[in-house]
Image 1: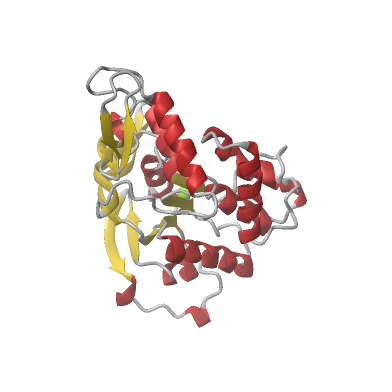
Image 2: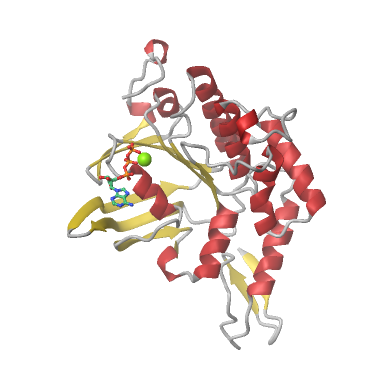
Length: 299
Ligand SMILES: Nc1ncnc2c1ncn2[C@@H]1O[C@H](COP(=O)(O)OP(=O)(O)OP(=O)(O)O)[C@@H](O)[C@H]1O
Ligand SMILES: [Mg+2]
């Protein structure tokens, strides 16, 4: 829980970090929030990720009746149907399911990148649907790191520029950005590739830049949509080891869509989805995986 003070009436508000208006006098609190975000990042500049635990809720993500129906002309495509999923703080969760089962759609909802047709998604018990544009942008920038299957790096920017871009949005100073950017790229093994552009990097290296970028603002949650889907076996394994290390060392919650058995192996739970619905949830301890016989784990 963070404490912020209204610049107008002096009221002290205890907050999860998502207050834009003073509840007493109605003053605009956005500058105060921006300052909180900035100092919060400074305080964590030496760490690669964290759960800053402004709140101590058991569940970092909860979905209730989450439903997404895409409408294409006359046709309705139900991509998610009534998904109820509670994700514990610090958990490593894998989401498995056939192509078209709704994995990316679920990510987009949890990550606040798209809105559900009905139902809700709570991040640290804050209902995302209730957030205004500023609050949602704050949450996305500060709380969640995104890794995509196709890396989604900005092609004209160097590794360093890609990684530090989210820090600009969080209001970090340039010196800190450069220091943190170099630290993160070093962690992912690219300390000697800071000034390479994506086309000057291999696929695995690009994905490592994307992992470093996801850590830019020390997120509590990393959402990874098939992060090893476009990588060879060895590079995929390196990315998985990296994510597992983050999870173990900084209690970052990892939520990853995957077909990769090596990823399943390091998960706490595996959620199986089919036709937009949760089919079942396995505890890792209860399932047998023979890694030695795997060849990269495409289903
Ligand atoms: N923008 C969209 N407009 C219309 N239909 C969509 C849209 N995005 C996804 N869908 C449909 O929603 C369903 C779920 O898609 P989604 O991308 O979530 O699947 P997925 O599990 O991520 O699949 P994959 O493993 O191939 O990435 C599919 O039937 C897909 O065709
Ligand atoms: Mg997908």
